[in-house]
Length: 268
Image (cartoon, rainbow, N blue to C red; front, side, top):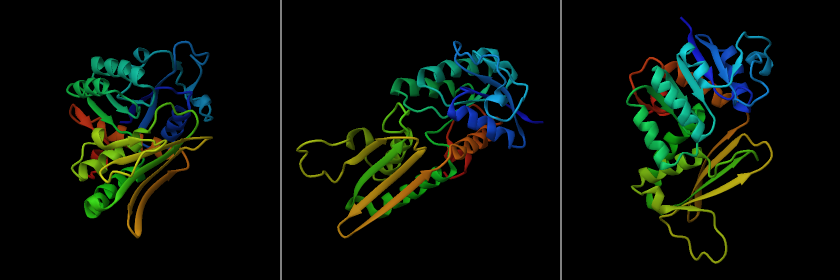
């Protein structure tokens, strides 16, 4: 039996890509799609918006209108909206895949609490390649140790609202954990003026927002005389969409808990 999937923000860039990916995925079916209640696209066919022709799924104005008809919800929206959708999923016992980033510590705790009742798969990036990079970063940090300076450089399109990206923060977190550091204490977000010599223990973050860059991430390990760079560049949102669908297919049958893409790919 096909797994019924709901997509939040069906008219957005990621939403349209998810619907396109669903049309190519065996075992998953688009069963619901939403947009903001004030959108003029409420009632439109989700397939037509994605350039696929009619799929017979009308865009709804609320997750409440679709949650009873789906097995798993995929949400790449905003922190406050995602928490509202999470509550609806918790009430209906529906699994959820969360690709939203920019949560506060308090919001993260709400997600953790909800995962005691429903299966939740949350990741800063659902790309298989990025998650492989997480594994490589852990290895590189442990091998290179405290003998290198570490910088995280990321670039995204001009419409992205949070910085650094969730993926960049996750990369920094992987490196910090491998080195026994607390990222909250060692992270440096941008530099300006007379900053003095670099503290070896810090992990720097640099952010670029420009044009239509889908997502570039590089972690630089720089020592005296050599440097190692681990880079991932996304040229299409389809890599994120396919990973999210893989996560949706995986998580829907799991017991209530908080999972991530490392669990889906069996990389832990």
